[in-house]
Length: 216
Length: 151
Image 1 (cartoon, chains in turn purple, brown):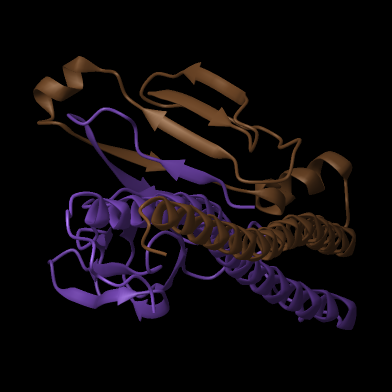
Image 2: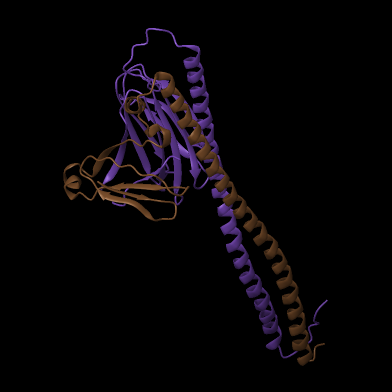
């Protein structure tokens, strides 16, 4: 399960994150985005590498966030406002540090938990030092296809886990809201009914001439 | 940088101060959401860097922590054995995830059933309160008006 990263408690020091700058890597991070905050991540990418950024909001508010991806020259490659989930693939057109930011600045008081998966390049081969001279045997190619299939199973599991976390967070919200509402409504009911009686009594207690007919 | 890792119950698993570079590993003993917090107390940084700190972070989880060339060298595995080992690790991760999913589903179901119960009891309680306050109101007002000789 991907661990959850969080910013430090010191306001004067703003931490910005750089992910593993390797030729072929995938980084999955779930982090907390406070309200009115923006969190940026940087990655050094070589030219021609195919990269994929996927993100999903897990908890908080309307489960949406702004996302923005820029290349080293500052050109915006991807910009979406208030998205719950999206996936974006691009090929790095030049070397340099790419930056992507998640923003919760439109929200006044909800903290959001955002998951993202940034994949740079293809997975490293199992035997990096060997030069592949001969073709793969049938066993080996069977192993490779099983490996790819299992990778997609793990990927689906991750997305399912996030959806389940989202659903569970909504259910727990609902539970606490029902509890508070029940207590609140009980109090309001009692206050209103007792108040009605005393108000009605006060209408009748000051009049000298009690000629008004009571009731229906 | 100070690193603190908390497990889902809030217990601190790891709490250490590192220099400008560090590496830490931990194994989770309970399923659930772990928190990894990194913060810097360095006042020197605040003065020079203008308040911003760029941190390089690399997190690897589960079977991604395995270094296969190293394992091959250590256990002296052939290529096919290494591939089989990798597949075994992946399948183990899938199994762990599915176990975790069963635990999560149970918690979700408990929350939903609790909500269901609360809504049920609250509806009954509200109806009872309504009827009781209605009866009390009528009785109270009736005795009040009788006292005032209006009824």
